[in-house]
Length: 216
Image (cartoon, rainbow, N blue to C red):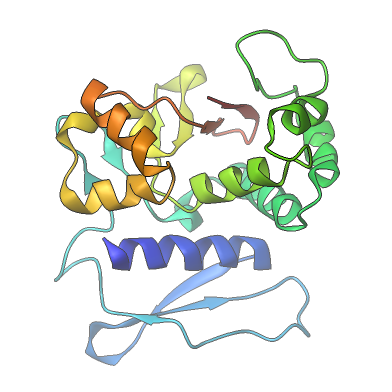
């Protein structure tokens, strides 16, 4: 699970850089090389991982009685990668207003609450601990650093982060529980496991790259 988590982090970093290529080296290890759009930018070749696929284990994890959990963000459709890249770059600035450009580039305003919200940025500021919205940005980044699932088919297809939103929390493996604690405060996660239902932030992007929701 740690190897999966590391790969998620690396591939998301590669998305922000522009592209990622997995190169198989001798001994079955893999090296992820990020190629930035800016050809002059330095490329870090230091991230080497044991082969998590093939001989060792599949990169996807099958949650108990649930959908296939995915970890390789670079395998997503290009429109989805582009949207994730935009969200990540904006969130990393620490300025919630930077997310406004992402919202304006979307075909529609993503759902951020059960009721209609005219200005998601203002809403996130209101919901944040200190009014800055930085904890909301952190939540976005934490979700996108986790495993995800593809739900529905055709026009109803949606990539959903984190995968916990679509699985029975009462049937998590110990390693999956650790992943959950990295997203949700322990006390709240414990209550969720008792109910078997995830009720924290979730984020959905359609295969066409439209950001549909970021909601609790």
